[in-house]
Length: 406
Ligand SMILES: Cc1cc2nc3c(=O)[nH]c(=O)nc-3n(C[C@H](O)[C@H](O)[C@H](O)COP(=O)(O)OP(=O)(O)OC[C@H]3O[C@@H](n4cnc5c(N)ncnc54)[C@H](O)[C@@H]3O)c2cc1C
Image 1: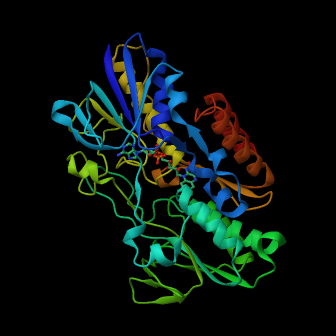
Image 2 (image 1 turned 120 degrees about the horizontal axis):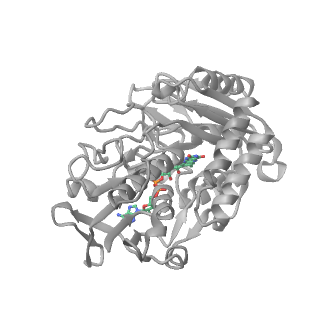
Image 3 (image 1 turned 180 degrees about the vertical axis):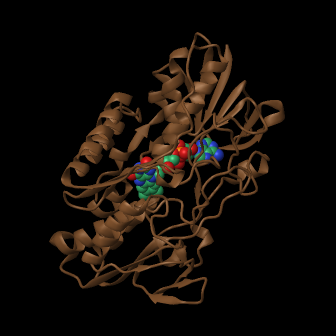
């Protein structure tokens, strides 16, 4: 029986678990380790921040989910991996050995890299930040809102797109949802006067998609009077301003930002990452230096942009690669990435974006309609009620075909 460890039970870790769990007791035993008791479904965070949705609906309890399916769950932080000896260390000093390990710890949202963030800044990137933002928006008495992504930097060991922002979909949700609720939801806002400005560290906004979604987003921003400021690298948030690397400042009463993404320190300490700590893998998601280490999701150097959809594609590949190695009759899917996300815009509106333009493909679609909102609602609920299990492939393929027809 091979000992498998899955480190991290987010989008990637849970998908790997569901893909390989049928082998438990036959060929493998599985231990899932996560420092949290619940997996956080991050695509619902903007609903918590702007609609006051219950946090509990974005959480998947892990112990029962994992242990009812025959595996072991350990709630503890991993602080080191000794890859040469196939051993990891937990924060409580316990050591565990493995035959194979899947690394899926996601990224660190590095709020402290932005001067003044802890005192004056807001975000939607985790449950604490989303709930804090909801309270702030409820008390908002008008003024200038500024939103945008800080710049992230990546390693260079593998060949992947070098995006300046990890993913700007959440910025789209922040500006459109906030604009909708400040205009339409009288209970939330009490008719306040406000303006929204958006900045991007990139030369273009939404650099991970092609011209069609980008133009559609630009048009909606123009209709809603949301100016875009390009090439702006955030360095500081003050009481009434945001400051950029080029020396410019903007007046700001409420700054809502996506912080830089960085790799967890323990991966750098364990010498498993590239120069920035992201895991270098081949196209089967196998570590370039260690045959028995696989990785998937935000932590991989190949994952650009940092998107749940990409985490799931990579998790499927990593799971198949392991199964093949264990003698299963399985074809490893190609590492064919695409951007696929549904951007909530408040009320009944959402924009579904499907694009592989970043990877040289020809799909570049945006579908802006209440049907997109229904699809998001359906997807989020499916994930929640099925304990983080992805909808079956045929449902995803059917929705993809439907969008192309529409
Ligand atoms: C506001 C927001 C909205 C988003 N919306 C979308 C969307 O609509 N569609 C989409 O596709 N993507 C979306 N994303 C991106 C998506 O959430 C991420 O790409 C995805 O969660 C990455 O999955 P992952 O498994 O790599 O990491 P995560 O989901 O972050 O999971 C990592 C897990 O590892 C655990 N962990 C980390 N370090 C350790 C350690 N040392 N020891 C033990 N456990 C550890 C963490 O507790 C966590 O549970 C959004 C992101 C944000 C912030």
